[in-house]
Picture (cartoon, rainbow, N blue to C red):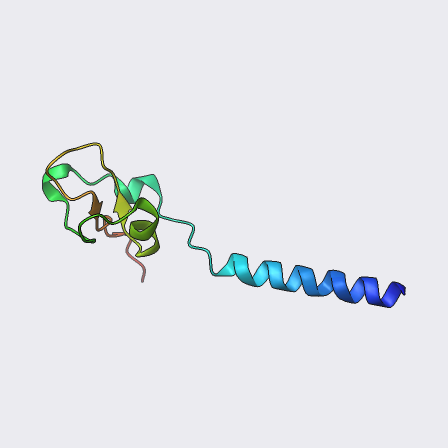
Length: 80
């Protein structure tokens, strides 16, 4: 009986961790601090915030008449 419980627990933990690995966390606020005039569209009409973020883009609907789903700033850190 104990072995069954441990096996079931291991199975539940394995399935739970694999689904978390597929979940997109999002971008840092720094990368989404793009001035409105510099936003490059990354979405399509009526894209939801979740769909936008899942594409690796930023979403901000607070400024009218500019792209709400837009490409993030590029990480400019140099590595040698």
